Image 1 (tube, one colour):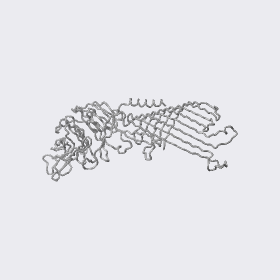
Image 2 (cartoon, helix red, strand yellow; image 1 turned 180 degrees about the vertical axis):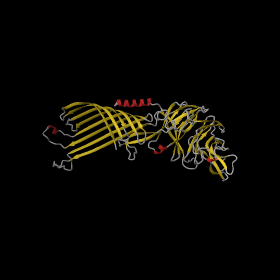
Image 3 (cartoon, helix red, strand yellow; image 1 turned 45 degrees about the horizontal axis):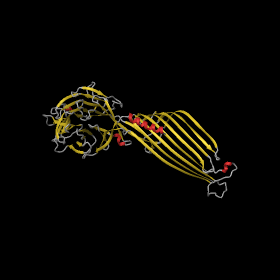
Image 4 (cartoon, helix red, strand yellow; image 1 turned 30 degrees about the vertical axis):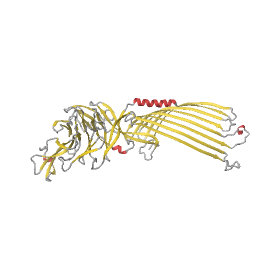
Length: 595
């Protein structure tokens, strides 16, 4: 018993010492909602973050920019009014300057000089600038739209500000996406149709370079971009599963990442942010499904199909971001565990990463943002414990009246009376820790104490045999301690919700101490029987999911132990004594499943 306690404490200590403090995320609050009013959104949203931690949300369909504090408190919004000097047509990507100036990508209608009856307009991308208070400052077209750029064959009919017939020439695909970011010198970087436009804070062109041309620095499907303190530009390529780095002059520097869900690998990366400490956070679309098999009873509505079918299964999901140096060296994997069995968490969409590394997920059905902030702790949220305690008492009374003895006590006094009292106490304690998305280590300890007393009363009888001269009323007392400690290592082979599979290796040690005593109640009867056993077994095995419904199981066990007994008869003489010893090995292989 003492050995098991020492083993349990030592194993927990080794796990805590060998597992470094892991940075994870915790939910800290939410803001927003569905609608058209204050701090309410429509479906298409873009996020940006100011140097003071304020949050900016551009609402494409409501034609607004909302400003919130770092804690989600609404501050103000920018919208189109009758007196506005600008008009939102299709606002999208947003960036915030060091002085909290606001820049947002949009489209502009620019009248082509010298055209009338009808007037001809160029329809092209631009950036609007607002000051820190949300007042309109100016608009920066990406090109000079005062002159005709494309042929009239691309023109579409429309109306001018006077309600007269006009022609509008769109400059490229009007549904294309833009990316926008800023450096520490308040220079703007705009991605548009394979090119990077670098502008100063007043919209003056500085540089333009291509990122879509074939070569080592080619970007196939840009999803997000950021600039570090040295002015280097980083673009996440969702299609190529990598990050591409350019220097301040637009020259290719390096790439890092490839397809996969291991360290320094990505599955469709789509968010990147430069943090205040100079590192980069990159989020991809890798998702991890984990099942935690509980000892609690299975719920009737448990959606998870498991082989045993008797116990409850908790299901939770992990997502991740990875931290890199500006040279592409991985420094940390950060896990975001979502609440177990909460269906609304399964569809959350990561919309932004602020400069402190906080993540902002959008609930697409409620249009609320949920903020998750990084935390560091020795025991992470993926360190799970479960304790189950059970106390039971079972009392049985048995009375037997022999109808054939023709005594006067028929139906009034029994010939045999027995009372059985059974008490038991169970404690089941489990510790599990997810080392990463794929591997889990677990330690469990099950301790059971049971005590049973069986008291029997017999009617006195006269027999010629000497034993019949003794009152045979007796009491049996049986007590046992059963202690089992087990160490598990689990590998999640497939995280898919429809093909979830595990492989598990386990080892255990179990000890049982049993003491049984039977003694006569009458003082003149010296009958006494004492049986004591000490049994142990240890073993290990493998569970391997061949599919979601079939599992291979291989186990090797070693059982050993001994018992001894002493029997003293009614007269007080030693009648028998002895002992038994066992030593058994067993190996078993089987496959179970269901159809």
